[in-house]
Amino acid sequence: MHSEGILCFHLLLRKATKWGSVLSREEIYTEVIDLVEPEDLPSRELSQQSVVEDAIKLKNEIEKAKENQSQLEKLGLKFGGKTLLIGPPGTDFMSFIHHISTDIPLRLLRFRFEGILESPDRLPENIRTGFEFAKRNSPALLYIERFELLAENNSNQAAVLSMEMKNCSWDVDEVLVICQTSNPKAIDRNALTLFEQTYVFQSPTLEDRVRVLEKALAGSSADPTLIAEVTEGWAFSDITHLASFLVRNPLDEKSDYSKSELERIIGDAGIVPLGRKQVIDSIAQKVEGGSHPTYERLSEEYPDAFLDQLYLMAVGDNFHRTQQVIETLNSNLPLTPEDREFLSYYPFLLSGSADEKLTRLLRAKRSKDRLDRLLGR
Image (cartoon, rainbow, N blue to C red; front, side, top):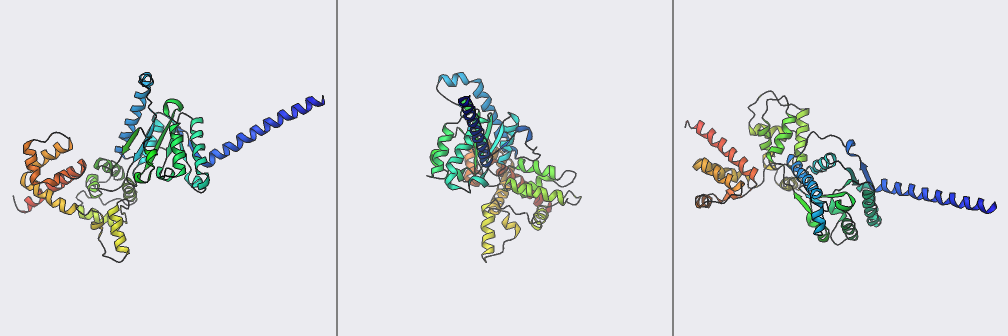
């Protein structure tokens, strides 16, 4: 009887020890990583549409991987599901994550940087804990923001992170690993080679900017496209700051705002696109005691004014030919001998993105039409 009592005591002690270890492990998880169920994610009214479009591409790839799983296994191939998002500061990366998490749907897990970065010596251990937790809560999306902070070149945590990523996949663990960075040069090269998909984002397109400004200007007679043209090159975060200002300070009920009026309104509001390096350089020069640039100077890249004049020259020479060549370039179609001859006179048409070319073309056409009216042509 005495021996049975001792045995029962030891069994209870082992159970208590096990429960205690589980509890402490759960506490470690909550210190390292956050988990949000897909139905608990807040809705997003404003999104960078060009980013969402790439999220749709990734979702399609996930579906194709499932459809072709047997063929992939036969060839010894895997889908993996490790994706890198690269874009300038202020890019709407969260729209990508939100779309994948809610549409599949998946639990969203994010490292708690405010916790794990405070203890650099525990960083490798915390990385392992995060991946372990993601696998325990699959199907899941593990989102790593500021990836360069965890995968710094030639660092111990980069080696640990690379190993954990190698041992985690959508095929086996039902875990997508999506990382984001605005500084890919700082990332360990070995870690970079692990990504199966990479999506590179630029500044918001004209369509992106118009979509946001249309909602901010709902009920106003102001032209969102004209304001969007004024904000060319702005980060998505800058556009949302401007949208917030326009909601708080509705424009007067007039539809014929000029570009200079809109630039003045935006400048007076203190909405400065700090995501742009040129703007930061200009402000730094001002703070350091150099020249005091106007808002117009801050809001343009150094070649813009000159390029606009060159576009006006091309449009004045032959608008339809200029438009045709730009459309050919934007569509990546082969250039005809006539196109090449035209470009030899106007080689500047080769520079800039497709949206930038079209924006400059339309701007030059409006300027030409205005000059023609003034001259009575």
